[in-house]
Length: 131
Image (cartoon, rainbow, N blue to C red; front, side):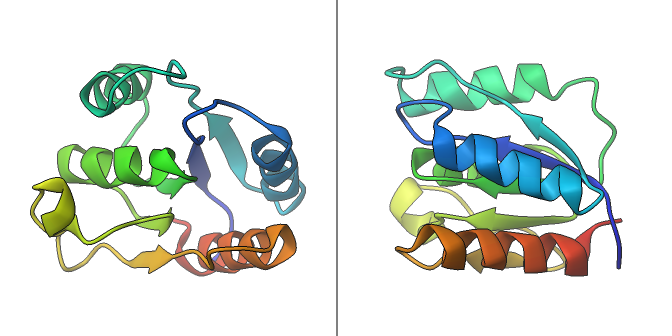
């Protein structure tokens, strides 16, 4: 489809080299990449609230990329906001006590290992689903 706004939600330990590199690669591909660094060490509910507050002014239709625990935060955010898609370290929503995302929202799990494989999967997903 093209380029769009991509929100990255980092893992539990916060922004690291993988997140920084991924944001740079997304920008190089023409996307507007925003990193929402929720406070490392806080609980799941607190991270979700922080993310929702940080994204409050952002128009709907953005893509979510959740890395590590950020994947679970992204799944929660996708239930509260009208997103174009979600790619990341997602788990079965039932394990989180959440409903499944709306059927029209594409969701793609990331490969479990390999930075380049994970980066390539995010770039391909964002290129295909950006609005």
